[in-house]
Image 1 (cartoon, one colour):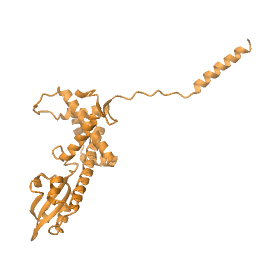
Image 2: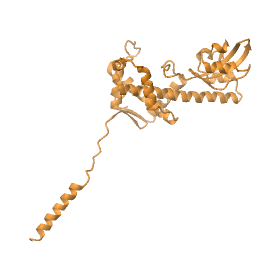
Image 3: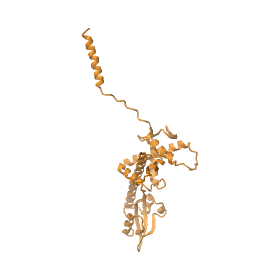
Image 4: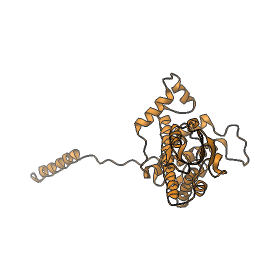
Length: 289
């Protein structure tokens, strides 16, 4: 008995020492709930509340008459905010699939250009509900949308060029691909112009050397991607026809200026994701839908 007791005590002491030396097992914390999930990608509550602050400060519905009664003002802003973030997430996902990404440097450069050394810049974005970080996130989303739009527009212009090379008439290609509302009803015809008067230097240079009846390649311009055909020439003027695939710059992008085909593409992507149950929302009137 006198021998057994020290042994038992030793075993207890060793067990305690081993327990003390054992690494602590971390218990994983549950992830905070997402405001929404889009095809497996979460929109955090933090991102949602940051953007909701912007919606409240800028209220896109202020003074807007309603044809159909909408949810209460707070809920209406919540719905607007989460829909905006869902759309931005879909655009980011589509951009990634096409190899379009926006670097931190591009965002920094964009914000610095907007700030332009103004001492009141921080106060101005704060009045609109932004923090410095949330404003950078907003601009990144905007640059991503422009990047995706340009990539898709360039592809569409390439498809238009392929149709022409395949022997399709200029008129039929205009009807299929032209985004320029000013020339669409005239089979793309611009009329008589002097190349030097064209506002786009790239377009002016291409038209200057274009023979009668000839068609240019794809020309990158400030409005998008153009293909032009010289229908006639007289003196220093050219009668032109145009195919323009719109791709606005970041400063010209707006809901009104966004090409209909791009809006439809994003809308179709969202509809497909909702149909497949790949969009879940936990805020606003569609929470749980």
